[in-house]
Image (cartoon, rainbow, N blue to C red; front, side, top):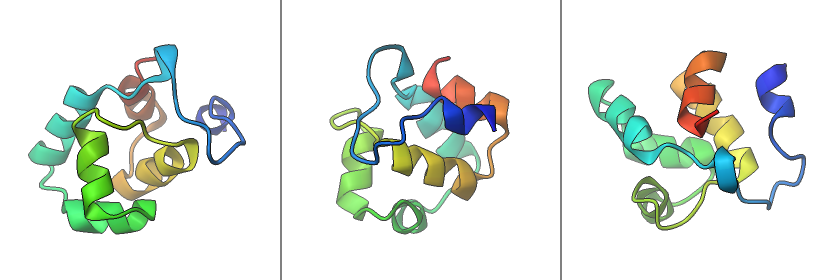
Length: 86
């Protein structure tokens, strides 16, 4: 799948540069769809506090978290690319 190949195989690498997550777009999506952030954090394998830091743009999402987020939010490839700013 194209989207997955755009991400690094290194699970600890952070997204940088043009691959940064569009935080406002992501937060708007979460709000409009009434996404439970505790469940989202669990699906990403991180704490609720860590998710909050990422949604505030204070810490970056790791590649594997982005892959899990795409699955959890049931995003289309285009929506996912939009969140990545690609």
